[in-house]
Structure formats: structure tokens, C-alpha cells
Amino acid sequence: MNERPVLALNDPALARGFSSLGVRLVPEGIIPRGAAGAVIAGGEAVALAGGPLAFDRVRLVWRQDEAAKECVASLASVRDWAERTGDAAAFEVALGAIARERAAFAGFDPGRPAIVGVLNVTPDSFSDGGCFDTARKAIDRGRAMIDAGAQMIDVGGESTRPGADPVPIAEQLRRVLPVIDALAPHTVISVDTRSAEVLRAALAAGAKVMNDVSALTADPVALETVAETGCPVILMHSRGTPRTMQQNPRYRDVRLDIYDFLEARVAACIEGGIAPNKIAVDPGIGFGQNDVHIGLLMRDVAILHGLGCPVMLGASRKSFIGRIDREAPADSRLPGSLAAALHGVDRGIQLLRVHDVAETRQALAVWSHLGR
Image (cartoon, rainbow, N blue to C red; front, side, top):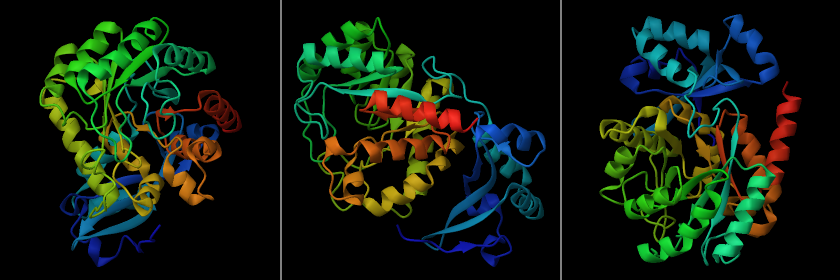
């Protein structure tokens, strides 16, 4: 990952002030649950998304002269700077969006990380394609994930791996509806689709949530359908289509570009009639990023708390893990997947989309116990 120069608050680049620069805040100095209460009570830190963690510093990130600039400072120092530059109110609004308690999403307590089990009813998904490509296999796998501790099962009938081709609606429905029908009485089901037609059929079969890798941009009536049905939606960032997204992806700054995209999509959803408490966001790890992009985005994934929504992280078995360590194939990336998941929860992530449910549950249990 390329290191970027980190400025001081007295640098002339910051003279324009918080609002004029378009600063985004990345929580830093994360304080674990065991110590968070005391520092919050003492006024030294604020809660992270209203959960059990706190933070006492922020990384300021903004665009200047077509480049990204950064500055890390304590909350007190940034507050003083914002007051000096006449931007105290804007800073407090941005900080409040990060700090405030999140509403329950799809019935989940946002103060505790929820495990979302991946169930691909496809022949060609990157990690488990073909393993659960019949209704019987998929249903058995779903039940096993529920027993292992998954609070939600994400059922998809169309692979969105890099290079994948679209799957006809009828085929998606053939794959997912029997699985949703069988599993819905036992847990919350999200349907991983870009199609409003698939969403309607999935909701009729018992699904409760839409997980859309296009953030409701692929289907012109998807946003309207979500608003009409009232179902919660997960808006994911991606570049282009699955077929093209990994062809030389470029960003001005991956963190700011993804933040801006998701901010615009959240605003469009609210304007279109979707309740704010029914929206979650996902940065789309590996959906149109190279390894430098992924490293920077993972490091600063907490920037997304500024959107005021629960955040889902789907890094499980992703190919960047193999490229970091010995080109491990997808089925040998469990340790790296757990490391990525715990990195996320250390930054306040509320939803973890994973293939290995039992192992993730145990890792979270130990993480929680040791952080008391």
C-alpha cells in the first residue's frame, strides 16, 4: 500500500477549513469495549456508531489539487481547528453522524457484529461455485450455517465474481426460490440480486432483505420496488459490471470515491422513499479495486461510518488474501478471512458477510471476551 504524507493541523493546506476542503473523517485511535465507557464519560472520546467501541482521534482526508491529503489529530485538536476556521458546526455534524447509535437493521442489534452467511446457488461463484448448485445441497448448507450461528443467510443465484456473465431472470428464480422458501421460516434471508423482478419473487417466498452489488443502479425500477415493498436494502459499491470491473480499475482516491458514491446512493434512496433505518452500505471489497486500493480501503474502512448507516464487510475468501500469502486458493483462505473480519469489527463494522460461519462466530466470541 502506498504511504501518503500526513500533514499537521497547522499546515497551510488546512487554512481553508473543514467545509471548504470537503473533509471526510476516519475514526482512529479505536478504544476497545473494556475501556471505552470510561473515556467517553471523561469527554476524551466518543462512541463509534453508538456501539461498544470508542475513538479519540480522526484521520482527516480531503482532495486538493487532484490528490488526496491527510491529517491525523485528536478530536480536541480538530474541534479547536474547526472553531478557528469557522466550521465548528459542520465538524460536529460530521462527527455526530459517525458517533450516533444506529437503528436496528433487519432486526439486528447494531451494537454487536452480525454474521451473514454466503449461500451461492450457482455453478460459477469464485469460492464455492458448484458446491451448492442444487436446491437440496443449498438448503442443507443454509441450515448448517444457521446452526453454526449465522443470523442472516445471503442467497444468490447469479455470480458477480470478476468476469462473470449475467444470468437470465428465470434461471435466477429457479435457483433461489426453493432455497429461500425452505430457509425463510428459520432465519432472516437476504437475496443477492440486482433485479427488481427477482426481489419481488424472493420477498414473496419469504426473503426480508435485498443485497444489491449495484446499489440499486442496475435495474431502473429497483429503487422504486424497494421503496414500495419497504424491505431493507444493502447498497454495495462496484465499478462497471462483473464482466469488466477488474479491467484496470482507477480512482482519484479509493476511499473518497467510494464514500461519495455511497453517499449519493443513500441520498437517492431516501429521496425515493426508502426509510434511512432500512439502508446499509458495503464498500464492495474486490469489486473493481486492485490490491493497493483494497489495502487503503480496508485500513480506512471506518470512513463509511460517516454515512450514518450500518456497514457490511465482505472480505471472506477474497483473492487479495491469496496474493498476500503464497497464492492460497479460495478454500485455503480461512485464516486471512478471519483476520480481515476481525480487522473490520475492530473498526466498528456491524455486518460480516462470510463463507465460514462457525469459525467466524468463534473468532468473534474470543474477540469480544478479550475486549471486556
